[in-house]
Image 1 (cartoon, rainbow, N blue to C red):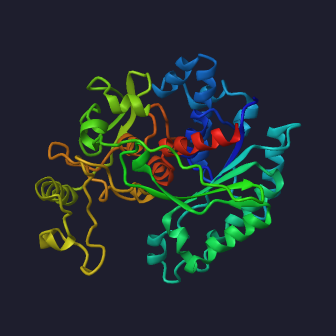
Image 2: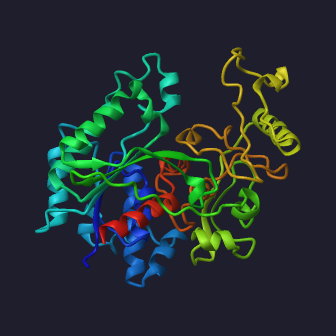
Image 3: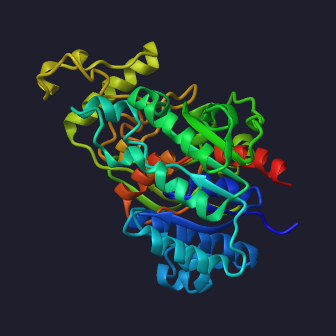
Length: 412
């Protein structure tokens, strides 16, 4: 059977896509508005292309900074390079995006699958709490209508629409109802919205997402529930243990591992063959933050409780409002799984403090990527802040792969 193809909309850095590629799906196009994330997608396509050609040494040369990105991309066929469409999906751009995808499809004008989900800020509970208008006038509330236009044009057998838990309640569930109605009008039967927890698929992070899966048919069908994995691994012991120690502000762009591979890193594919790690870089912190981090780490390691802002010595407090956001400082749980990694990690590291008094700092780019289950050879373009943002916005590849397995069985 020919390769099963898909289009990834609002693709981000490609976490969901990475999972589908690992299950044998072939991407026709990725559509992403962020320039850095688009570059990350192209670099990852170069990785997959070179692996298939048994020329992975070229990709490794790029990771080691022996060749430039321009030189790396020269090894990627122009059609594949152009399959990453860096554009915001809007009334103005959608026609040109269709044309670009049609060029990728050639004579085959149909794809098997469309995946992806619009930016989540408009549906997220945090986003609504911070906005005085509760995000009611935010145009991102209605990006699903563009998703519908892609379904109408390419008529895939299935689609996968993912988003945050807030989608279930945003606008008193108005947007979800409108989505389901639109998808039904386009000829899709949608399985009941299902909440998946990344922890149940091997990810060492508490992360829940709403998944809508639609099938092009009138009859009802059951959600292809992914097979769950027993996940007793621990963040510090199993995920972070082999990475070099870091000081605040230290940047190890290329570094060797400090310990041999373990069961988790092997089974998850996070360490997947190379003998070095990249982007193990962390932000610098001022003396005040480091003192607070140390207090937060001590409290977590001794009591398994979070340091409240009101418990910080007065000389270290800078905010007068002590009635809200008391949990400004969070330590990653070393003996369990991390709390959810979000894009705000690009702003500061207060919510993601490394759980060790010998390394008082926030987590590194590579540690954040590992919490999301990205393999160590996955390179994020655009610098530290851009990398953190891409990682925080991503679907964990291991979770994406679990979804892809179920769909692969149905499609074949």
